[in-house]
Length: 500
Image 1 (tube, rainbow, N blue to C red):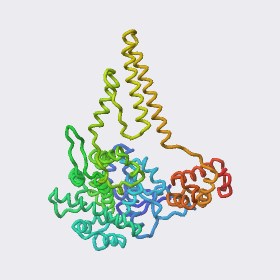
Image 2: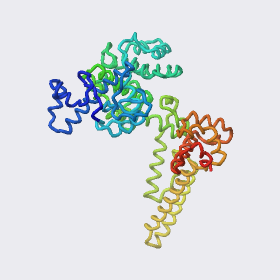
Image 3: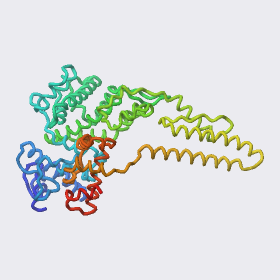
Image 4: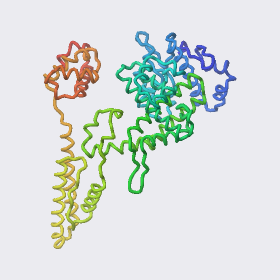
């Protein structure tokens, strides 16, 4: 659009043709000269777009901090839309402002995306607009309450004197209820413990956390996190393990968020070197952290929970709320030997007695089916020996027995998977209870969240007591989808049709 204004990165002037403005007015700037020196016209256009978006990003930060002015967004909303400044957030790759409900769609196909994951695009965008804390004496009221509930020890003193940790705490505490302040305090203390470990390893006792958000310090950060998580190197008979895998997962995600805060800090201060170092550190994290830490942590404690039957206690819970220390370890040596031995005997030999195959998942039906299959193999092997003395079809009989064994085992697995999640049709009373308790959401055409669904189950008495809140949520979603397919213009007038 020719009437759309863009902010200049150098003089902050609003112009319509930003490319011509850079070439004519700021042609002596080093960054403009680097762009003009690019031979490929497509790459040159991309770099101009990047510079244009960075200028708009600085303008939008000024508007948000002063709470006056107009945001420059990539896709302007319609004239009748009632949207404010809080409804738009920047992309973590190109820094362009988009409507927050459509930000995930842009991040998945952004042309400046460097291969990083965009699973937390909203959280990363909020970190890019968080105002940094430039002094420990000037903090927000929310952060002041967080520091008040923090224990007074060496770790808390480090957290209270590091500006990056204070900025991280301020971003978490903003618009949060007081009941969440203790959790924010715990996350700040986690970063303080990591900083203490980094200072001890590098003998930089006065360094702050921002000093280690550099590509050449990435290995030092990995080593410090491994030490905090009680990393044990693998041997010829055992793999790499972590004594506290949850510590590695938590520290990793929080140091990645701190890297984005440093990018935000650098963009505000127009520090090209600091921005490059923080962005490179974030890219190193996206490429190597999973191989060094995240892939090792879940295998250390989650697999014993599955094998001991404790998976139900972990399902649906946040990783920050799981105490991995109380999950007992499992001795795999004896079970692994039995499984390997039974597999070899069943596949190659029929002379020896077949052992019973153990099922680590603990399913009684599958154990019974496998035991009967093993008895069938043993009996069939004895029949094969007798038949081999009088005929020449020993291999054919063995293949038929093996095929029958696979059919029996496969059918039992299919039956077990079907019985695990049985489906039950919704009765007329259940649908009527959903409409009675969640009619407001249905009339508005919105899908309710967890809290309204749990409240509807509680208010319905015994009607919805056997239903999960997710089932109630998706039932409302299916009702709305069915109404749209039938072109029902007034959902509130057709609630009876949705029940029938």
